[in-house]
Length: 145
Figure 1 (cartoon, rainbow, N blue to C red):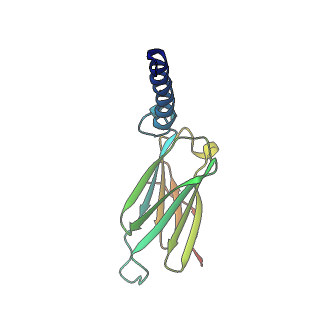
Figure 2: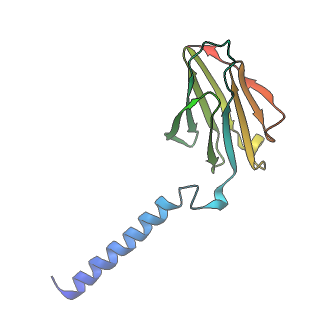
Figure 3: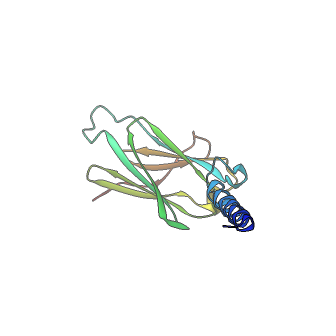
């Protein structure tokens, strides 16, 4: 292999790797703060003592522009989870609690853009929205699976 061929191959891989890292790293919300539209908080209240339902809620979040990508987590009642909405897209939330299922629009650009944070309170009687973590509006209910 000649010296010029070796140099060409090295430059080719440097250019290729630079492109690869640029496209993959800027996808992360921690790398590009300019794309951050809002932080979405999902908060579960502690279960009342008289409630005999399961002690965990399974949460799945998807983005309408990236249907192949979803976030999944399991929350114990009384805990919370947060993610960053960084695309002007609809983020769907789905929850499973024993034999109950619930769904809601975790982030809607027209409704939520401009608010730094979006709060969702998950309770045994439904899903509640707030932008200030104190004034809540019921937006969805649990249904039987």
